Image 1 (cartoon, rainbow, N blue to C red):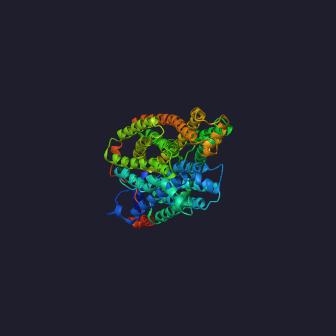
Image 2 (image 1 turned 60 degrees about the vertical axis):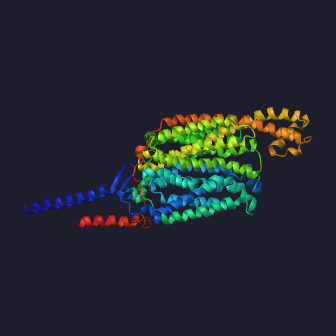
Image 3 (image 1 turned 30 degrees about the vertical axis):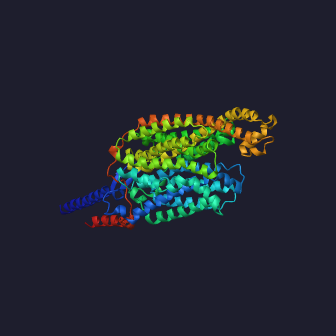
Length: 603
């Protein structure tokens, strides 16, 4: 009897210990899904006093701002110096790959960075991303061949995917209702490059011995500072806090490596095909058709594989697209990017054709796109924060984009002021759409999917912008080939150009050396330049017709979005863990957790 009673008491004590230990562990797992067992210490609750004034938080914000500036330095400055770069270390038939390499890295990197940092923690992604930017800038800044700059820009594009993902990092650290304002503030930190990058690039070329290389030197400095600040101040939740009951090796076994290959390879091949069709090869050539088809098939297989085959953690969680309003917001954001990135390429050409002047004058006019978009991003953040009916903000912005894009059809040669105002208003609308989509789209998704939601949005909108740029460029090229001969030939002949000089006229018109044409004089040159501008005005009308079509799609998608006002709460998704942020580090938290289990066993 005594032995039996003793055994019962022992079993009861052991059961109580197991129950208490289970309760402790359950109390620490705040979010449980197939992918995550997130520790309650990772959540943005119980923040210490003055947390948002701590060196850790302020240092992180400074790092995010510098990373964003580095991204603009790596994209806007070199893209406005391509001709000079080609003259200095070329000429190279691959010069267009400088911009393409950046776009490839950016498009592929967004989803990878967003999803993988959700799973493994963001700290080292942001540190290494800015180190990549530093290395890319060093490679490009010291390059003696165009191909070296292409390699540097590929690294820069991958880094840019991390740097633009500041939206992910800041969104999870601040209250939901303040996300739009913080995103706008970090966008604003890059105003000097986003607004005046073209002029700064040309000024550096004109007034410094290193010339265009200074664009990359500045990027080295800024990216290096960003990497240092991230290392010392940015301590978001670690893998241990995101996966209480799983090791890194167990998580690696669940990863979608096949999906990574299919997505990265398919998207890269698809975008290369688009770029080839825009200039290197004819659209009906085997090179273009094969790469576009293979890339598209790869992306389709990727979606099917993640939907029906992979049994671990997919690269792209397809349940995101079932979240309220998410797909409509992605489409709206994609079309906004179709205008912004395309106009960075096409607006300077329209300026050169319709409002010719000095290089500095054309540089100032090229600043319209970046300046207007940045102002729109700031306005969008304010509107989203204080107007809960966000759906109507998006609808109004898309209608505004449609209206001003339609008005751009009416621009004629010499109507500089009109062109500036209309382009400014169109890009202002794009900026509002961009901030609204980046700040609001993830709110209806689970907090643990924040990076994947913004990563998928980023990759889709970047790829969409590449498609749109290819479409616009092809339309412009085809229409110029149609309208220039119709306008220029009769104008030149009527002004007195010999018929025998027509072939030389078109060769030198493209090169900008009309004075070399036999039998030409100032009157003929004036007539040819005027006719060429009129032909360009006609050609650009068709480009803007295409923009109108995209804007109409965005308007329809905006009507299908939801009002996010109910999600703009005081909730904070995550908090940092370091002494600089006023919180115990993850290592300290781990020791405390172990101590709690020991104390529980002793009890």
